[in-house]
Image (cartoon, rainbow, N blue to C red; front, side):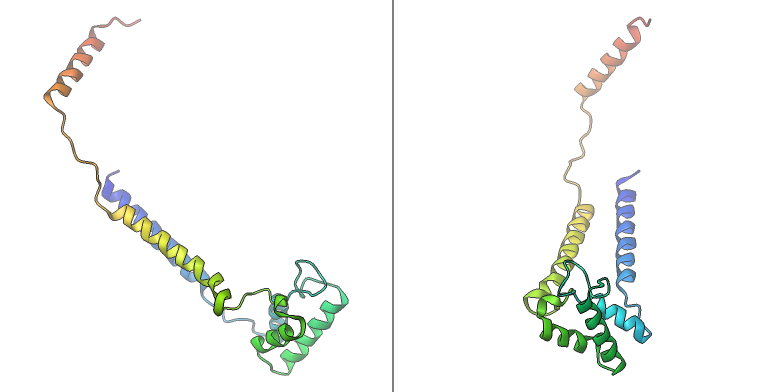
Length: 159
């Protein structure tokens, strides 16, 4: 495989991975029914009494109370962010399982994107830069050494 073909293969791989990443992050339109909205919101709220469980996963009484409160607020037409904010005000900001996208917490969303971009740039640079290896030709002395080695290998008896 030539160097140009290798570069083209890597370039195509990067294009495919970037396309898959782009399609994977597209918004699916969100939940369509109130029940799906309740479940989606409950999955982003930490149970105040449990360890590492969302309200949707927990079966303790406080989680059931929060779940019914979420359902009541969804039926009343409140926004998802409004419901999350009410619960954060009531139980503290640590109840939110998804970090805020602003301020210092916004770095959680920015750092992976910047890291991926930097990695892509380094990969592109390493694939597209000219090779630093100088093309060298065999000298007459090198050709003589090869000729001697070939002659010796033909003259040696084989078992």
